[in-house]
Image (cartoon, rainbow, N blue to C red; front, side):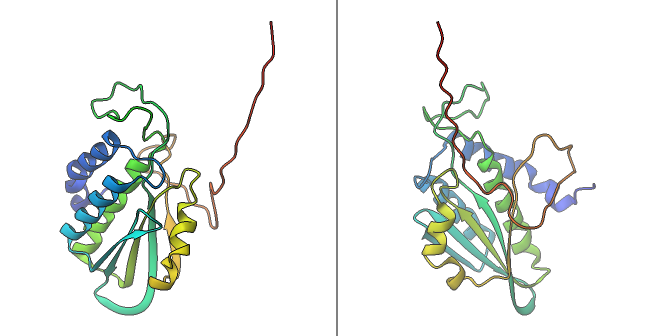
Length: 195
């Protein structure tokens, strides 16, 4: 897979955003700093509309394409971290004890910001792209909170596309599946008794 030059040029700035988010993780519904960073970046890219506070700390942006259409698609990323300590030794490791981006949501947020920059610069599509930055994905029902706040009434769209990083896939590969995927939170308790 060949990566277009305009995307390659974004790599350093998007990497810096990801690492900044990684250093400052926020767990469910605490994503105040992250939401502000996202909203500021979106405004700097010249998107058509930015709405904050949907689902408490969620952010939604709208980018209208060059060609008129009533159709729209949603692109979604999650922003929250996990309540756990980081012990990676990375230069950009979490500065917040007990909080870490261990599931890749820092990357998801940064990737969607990269898409926002490209889409707002090119606008080579019909209709609208609605970018959904969701809070509280890790057990906090952030998607429901955004829907309860009228996400789809305020931003009518025909479909929503989300992604999740998958370190096991080779660079340049991706996997897709129609319908829901990875849409569950489960808990398991193991009790071990011994001498």
